[in-house]
Image (tube, rainbow, N blue to C red; front, side, top):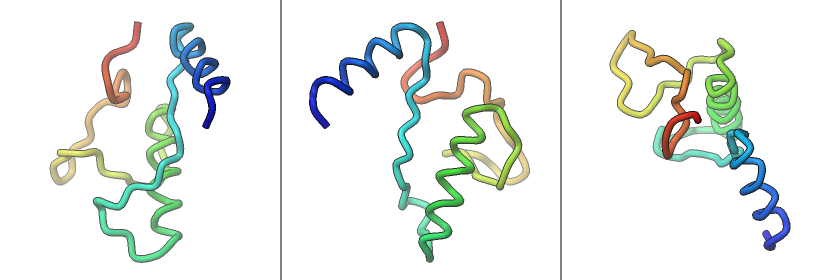
Length: 78
């Protein structure tokens, strides 16, 4: 990625946008590419506050779900 998109993402974040790149996660030990896709989609839906496939958050205990509001990594909403 070059400076152009990074600069635009920075401006968007300063304006209040939440940047959520679709980065595959491997700490949950996916067995198939479908597992990777489902985890990524689950995280994106969770960030948007939409109920979707179960995607446990880091540190989540059995049967509990933390509120999605303000849950993005790196800080809170302005």
